[in-house]
Amino acid sequence: MATWGEGLILASGAPVTLPRDPARDAARDELLNSEYHKNDPSVLERVLDWINDHITSALDGLSGTGTSGTTGLVFFVIVALLIGAALWWRLGAPGRDARTTPDVFGTAGPRSAEQHRTEAAAHAAAGRWEEAVREQMRALVRSLEERTLLDGRPGRTADEAAAEAGRSLPEHADALAAAARAFDDVAYGDRTADRAAYELLHDLDRTLERTRPTHATTAGEAA
Image 1 (cartoon, one colour):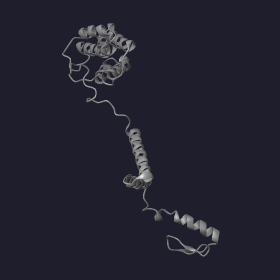
Image 2 (tube, rainbow, N blue to C red; image 1 turned 30 degrees about the vertical axis):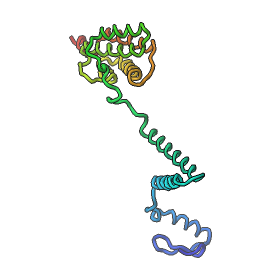
Image 3 (cartoon, rainbow, N blue to C red; image 1 turned 120 degrees about the horizontal axis):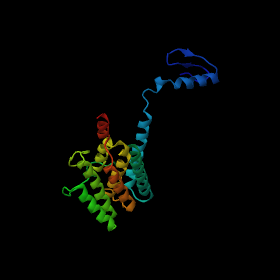
Image 4 (cartoon, helix red, strand yellow; image 1 turned 60 degrees about the vertical axis):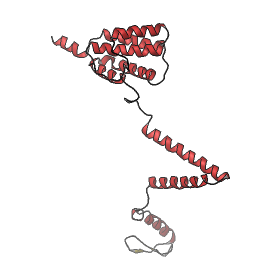
């Protein structure tokens, strides 16, 4: 390429002679041509290279002593926290699965809905709200199974029971989902319960007893 003001050769090979200022502008525009940058590293590659260089420097500093070692350790911790925050933002908080939320009945033997209700009421009378919430949710699910609105499948979680029952009782789908979340938070999330949580499940159980499923109502109307 010629000096400023004398001329320059474009990527096409054609020489161009321009005054000094227009030549500078033309050279700048020419250098922005994608042909010159098609092999440049991407932004992500540059960021990764920068992180790698600084982590390497930090690790080298950790093997030293004094200020350089402390600085390297601090930088290493900061980078680790940033990576962890990025992963948390990208993936979100860990969700519940079958390993953290076993079936709603746990290891207890088979009992009727009334038996679960009786035990829930006894826990509530004694102020044991966590136990009352667990037993009341089990009473609710067992009642739906006894009415054949749910099949008696073992291993079902509270969330699964709520989702399946919500299809037969769509007007109560949101309440069922909220009840399942409350049960999971208390039974598996180490959350504390209170009278309000127990009464919410108790009232929903009683409401569902008086509710006819959608398919039964449709069949009755057709008859």
